[in-house]
Length: 246
Image (cartoon, rainbow, N blue to C red; front, side):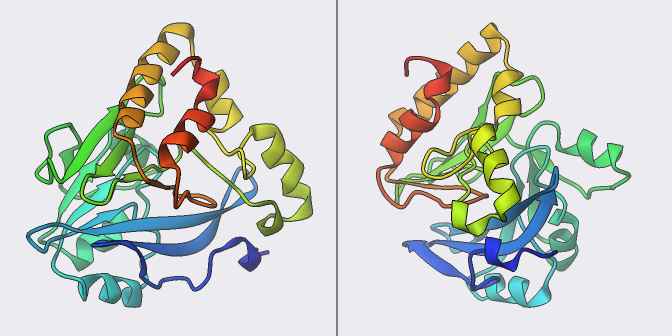
């Protein structure tokens, strides 16, 4: 079952978010049996180079659409789960630099996948200060790179918040999403991730999230589910209240 209704059509089409920021909704994938809609984010940097966050398809027409915006120079795998389509984009755009979050290479190798040349994501990447980059620390496995496009006050997350809309899920998946804490309008990090934190790890994550809140984002783009077009700072405080006072 493909769960076409769980997606955000039209798929593979550039959707403007703000000046020089677009998203492209992708196909549904199955993760632990749940239908996950996917989404990648594209930013045109001041010099015209194109920055692609979490590619979600190897469809050539999708790549063509992104390339029409400008030369594709940066491919980003933001956490240990979001990397599967990067090799196809590396092959199509050999002049682009691939940027991987901690854990990506080990995860890919454990699945028998060989990734091309890459740079590890850090806080001083070549798109700074236009895009701020932070690795959200604390979780023993899930170290996610998050990004803030300063000119448009757009925060780009991947799995730290998931926000599935009830009507886009099959009936049997709705109670599971509710129990996991990832059902709109109160989406947050999945329950298994939240439960895996120890006390010291939560404190490190809390400090990272405080920094994101301090950036005062206007909008927050998510990889899975309804994203937040307004009130970004308030949505962060709501979604991460499980960490304690922010």
